[in-house]
Image 1 (cartoon, rainbow, N blue to C red):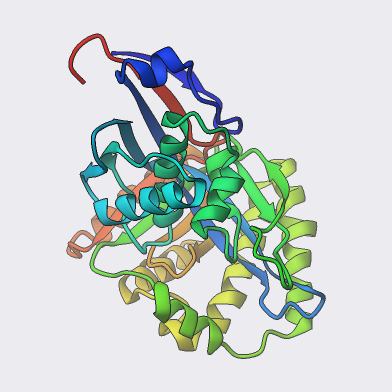
Image 2: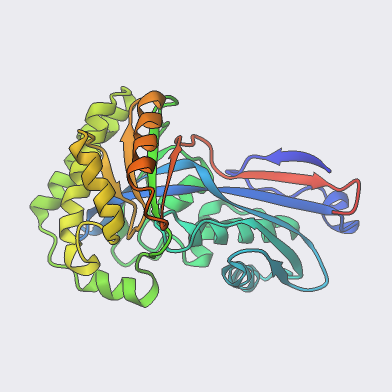
Length: 346
């Protein structure tokens, strides 16, 4: 099986002889996880609501493999959402849904890593490619209903890096515009803390929780905007991990307190909260929870420090079977599209 890659920010089909007529082409799409670092303005009194900052991760990732078939089928983890994405894309774009989907790996659902967006974008993008339809990830995401509050997942799929979006314009259904994309420094690391026994809010529960949040003061929104635009992004551009981590930690502290009644505290998982408290006692500042969690994170300045911290964490919390740790990089590329020309039975 030979592979040929296609840039994800320009989704274009293969030639008809390779793509459709012989029915042998397979497209594999690898979509990265992301951290959602929080909303900037939940009130939207100036006409735009939300606004998000996020980081694309080099792992974990969603990987789907797709080829034309006689009917829509799917195997692997999270197949229900894979099938739903294919059905919706086929209906929205008026294309053939007779595709065989193999989900090789999926992000853990409702963990704060963007599992639904990345799986949906990967499946819908593959379906469009196999049908010869040229669309941008933004168009695909809008059709799937992704980007209802944040465009971080779409930005991670498109180009990776650290992304700032401009929030939702009042009265618009379009995903928020991406205002800034900066690379994540190669030598920085991110400690991820998973709680495999817990899931964050989603669906109707998430909507109810958002609706029940206390008022978001304009002064708080202004402070969040300054932290994002005047501290975090300049520090990132200058590779100043201390200022970047401090600003992200402050944003997370303020948002965690704002969400505390809805999620049971600053963190949705009490086990993850214990790890975060321990990391804080070690002097780490870039701590937080991605989206509704339960995944927690810590931003560190170099690989050696990260390796030392993760070894300590695994030793200290080794009696917690639901807790898991990983040390990852930021990813400065988006999803990877590979065309696999089958030389044997795929």
